[in-house]
Length: 298
Length: 325
Image 1 (cartoon, each protein chain N blue to C red):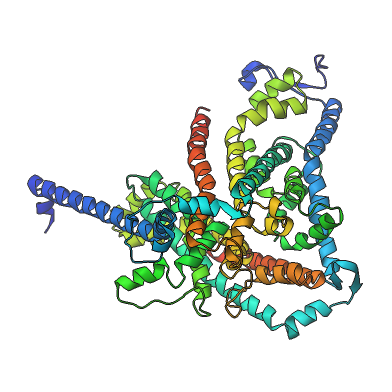
Image 2: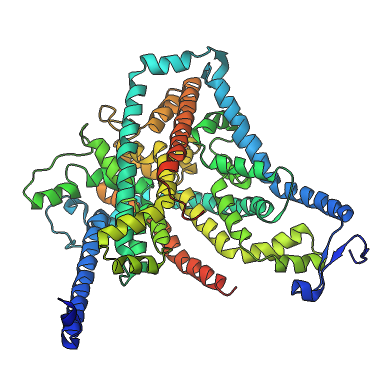
């Protein structure tokens, strides 16, 4: 019975128009919904940003959402945590730690990944299975003997316990990530190098590594974020105040007897502390997408 | 390899291979090659192998040994057999509490993270404009959520004068100090974990975009509505990714530490309400210096995570769909 109607061109067009309006409305509805969810999720962060720029007395008052008077006092006060000990030292400690961790992960993990992805050797699948297995191990089963060992050789309160494992490719996840990437590279270039008499090291260093830039960049970004945010191991190994990194120092805000009991200072320093992670992410997003784009040519 | 003994080698003509002439090595030269490759591979693996022995295997064995001893860093460990394990399960009420707290934490946060991440990913996958921006914004909490800074922020947000009470105030609801309340402290920490659903969402989104549009078109022609399309096409096709995300989330949330530490200032309070397993282990090892006792806890955690993962893999046979493989 409806068949006669559906062939009516005018009605068909009206129907299509109605469907399009409905789709448009639904699109607007979805956008509003997503923005509302994001608003709720990011509200605490925005609140913190505004609080960091507010005079101390106004933070918990009913002074409106957006501050009436803007000030940098909180940043100046927060930066000076204890007497002559400032966040300058903590940031240097954190960045040195992150830089060395990145170097370690890039070298050690890419070497292991090259072997797993591009070479044949005895016991390959057995070792590969072990590598995958270590990704699931909770750190706790290694932590205590490691700590006792590092304590006995005098490495506690140095960054060595946090760095040396990276140079021994302890983050199996990144090996796995690079293996996946290196496997996808075409073998022709490496074969051409073999014909030219390149050694294994040259094949790895001059051909595979430059082609693996996107995977290396991803590893660098995530090593930075993980190391910078990591608290557990830094809490255990870095206890001297001048060795402390940013997260360990931020913890001192919890101590009400410490010199840092101001909420303004706390919010200001929390805001500064998440800055590098967000910055690194924003900067690398472009790098990562570019990496994916250059991948596209093959 | 410049001289080639034709009788021993298979020579492919250029026409056959469609590329320059290549020589497949003989057995003799092949094994020499293999030996060189073998040696090279192990040299490349040397740092990792050293790490596996020195910072994974040996410490694990040492930790297993310590778990049967009484050891307080100073002096030597004394062998006490299964005493640590017996004590943990029979006379340590805080240990039992920490297990319950952790089970509640994992049991609520993993399903909630899956639900949120999948829902938002499905909404984002409907061809909305600004997908990249939304994806980044939803991902931001995952970047910073594990940091001490956000833990400190959360303590204030759920504090007596924090944002949560401001919002409740708009609706005329009188607030309270959520994070200092034994009933609401753990839910506040769970909220923080769920807040970081963006990482799972990104993985789901990548999977959703792999599903061919034609499947949905075919279903629409057959008269399937949006829910049916999701239930009958999307869900079965992404079960491998749901599985992957679940295993990842389980392993991670069993080991959660930082946020419970920060909101309770390392104590796991109020009244042990946020005493996650890792936090209690930390207290035993590095505050009480009960290294043997804490090692026993570490091995129980390893076994628990192993069992949970094994259970997931076993159950995957019944609900994970691997397409035509």
